[in-house]
Length: 259
Image 1: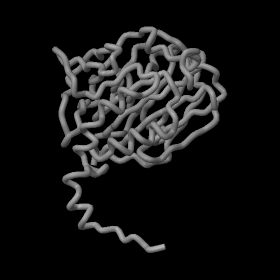
Image 2: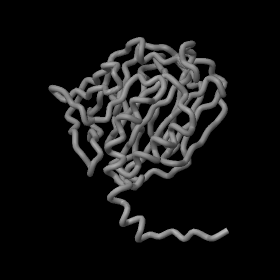
Image 3: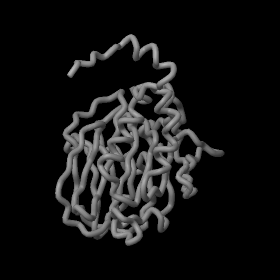
Image 4: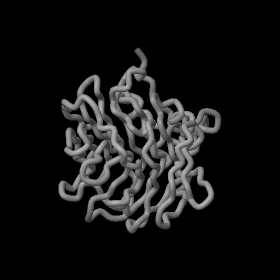
């Protein structure tokens, strides 16, 4: 069998007719269609659609607009839209409602669970930094994706009863400031696992919890109690345990926008 040699010059010549998968423009034009097809999508905030007084619009079709707090600024990095939090009172929120009380036991979902995340940039660590979640007060814990300063890692955690941690999974990826990370957490109530992705690194652990607590805490992006000093982009929330290949596809197809 003849050996086929890659012709780099031909690839360059044909790139005007056949788009490269690693071209930022190619990722940019496909983002909305990819996220709109996520199973169990409950909210998608790309941070490009912004309303009066700074509210962040939800493009999932669920109309879950996030309220604006502090003075974060909407910006663009190349082709990537984002909101820039200063770590002092900046965050987005939505009051509790049924569509945000994801328990992981929804009978109408074929793969029950929870998946949430986005693209994140950290200007500073040095303290806990909330990214997205419903985790408030002393007995109103549901789910949270955040930077845990004590452990020096990104963590995804859930509570089963609202007052205590049930399961958590941390990432081994070392966090540095001044660069983008694709960070996603997942609770799978079928396989009884809890997972975290940081870029292409996927780590998992067993999780015996049978549900996520349905509480009254607001959904927050950026965090009121442990505010994020950094950026958020393409933030999403799903009432389903997305299969590995979908999460990997989100990273693979959008990462060229975040170089």
